Image 1: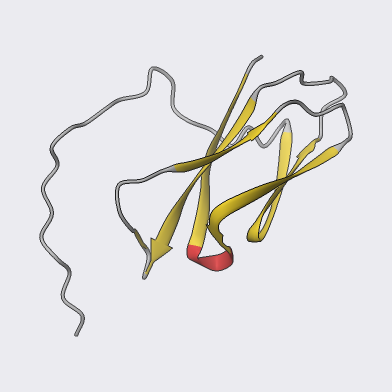
Image 2: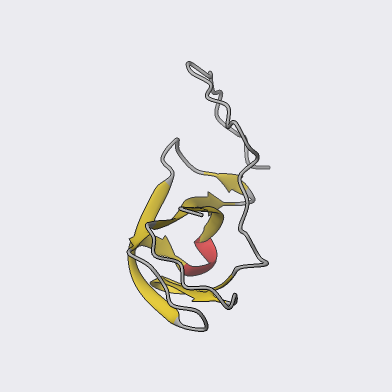
Amino acid sequence: MDQLPDANVKQVVFFEEEPSLHQDVFAITTSAFTIEVSNKSDTDISGPIYVYYKTVEKDYFRGGITYRVHIPGIAAGETYTAYAGHFYGQESQVMYIDYAK
């Protein structure tokens, strides 16, 4: 049986609003080192748009780092492909999207 290491929390930060993938606005497709974000809305999003993701190992988030990719903006109905150097396909998970509304 795998034994989990001990961990201590030294700092906690809370969000003012619960983070979201904004699935009513964006569709996300991922693969190794790539995150594609499509604007499903009928409105251009001028940006910036940030997609946050973490590394997952055996159903646990590994390490304290949350990575992000920057997208300058996406026109209505368009798709932007972002290089995500720490996105390892199924070993990573998109956590939320933050964008200027």
